[in-house]
Length: 127
Length: 127
DNA sequence: CGGTATCCGATAGGATACTG
DNA sequence: CAGTATCCTATCGGATACCG
Image (cartoon, rainbow over all chains, first blue to last red; front, side, top):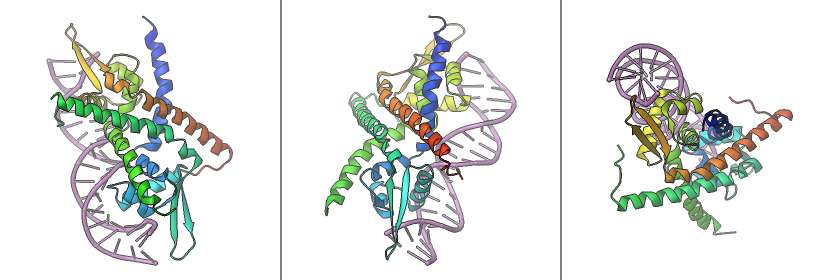
């Protein structure tokens, strides 16, 4: 138990780099929720608004642009009248499935944990 | 293919709620990296600084407090001289392993994808 | 070593109004 | 319907200095 620290550090770095790569692309409150919404198939602007509760037009617009630039979302304009715009996932963003599942499962676990702590009156008041 | 939309919407919501629960706790640039650092065992303030490249004392201090309040990190003060403070994960935060693994794998995939696109000269300039 | 205090700029994100 | 424009606040996050 001497030189583990150095080895550990480089091991840690090798995990941290890709994790931070992911976080850079997925950061913020809305990107993953938007992607979740689109996992159910291509949708129109307003439909996403309805799924992702609380998002404003402004944020949705901005986040969709971000996601499109990063190759995670495709914007398609149907040249009908009136014009119809749809958004959908790319093959690449579909690989986010495991991330979403992991977050979902942990979210459920976390909420269960909170309820438990509540029963045990061990809640630490937030702020 | 008529009423799927309503059903889809409630299905979507049932995924979105726990995902957003997770994101609320894990948001920001630093929390998951800090947790990754601590997966290698309890560490001191400065050691975390070294693992999580680029973080400032101020942010680390703040984020550790946040994580402690949410029951994801434990702060332990050894009453030696000089005083030694260590941080470690809780059983609960250890369940984040799957989330971290998923993000790590996706990060690797994403970088591979970027390199591919680069070769194909399909890069979309950022900004 | 393990932080806190202060200051500051940048970005996230909300509210509201408006447009083709 | 599918957004943009404008304005605003809050938080993020960096720099620097300082403290027991």
